[in-house]
Length: 195
Image 1 (cartoon, rainbow, N blue to C red):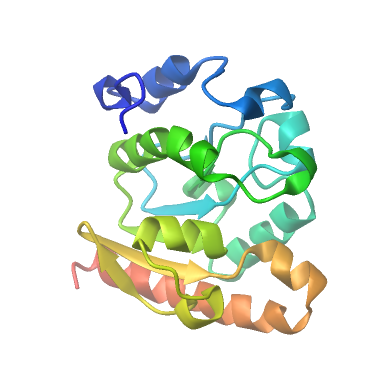
Image 2: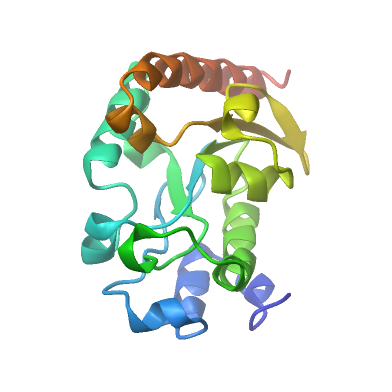
């Protein structure tokens, strides 16, 4: 489903302007701020999460709460900084009460995320959590089955990992995420070498 032709936008700034004060779905009525995405517009590594949470809704920036701090630690563990990657979400507005995004909300935002991916053209996409992995890979397997493996879709390397928030609730996932981020680094380095 095309929404207002986001494919016509030739830059992230133009796409952000096109999205504007989006009123395309019911999430607009309950959000504080739209969370478009942030980072290097030419990043080799792009992260895709599920949806903004409370802190993101207040600031307009993805991954700024406790999960965001852990994401920063994970990036640091592989020699990267937030400014060197691009971070976006499946949906651009916070679902009320942090509920899962509904199909119509995912469908409404999907063209904007697809255009972000096209414009950034990352070598590697790391999906954060189940929703993002299912969307990008077009599969339904549990994240526990998908995580940490390398997939190829549309000429890109895809590495699904747990959402950083999972480690905040289950400390055993902390080490798993650190391992998966090191795997992301290996995939990124191989892509840079053209392997």
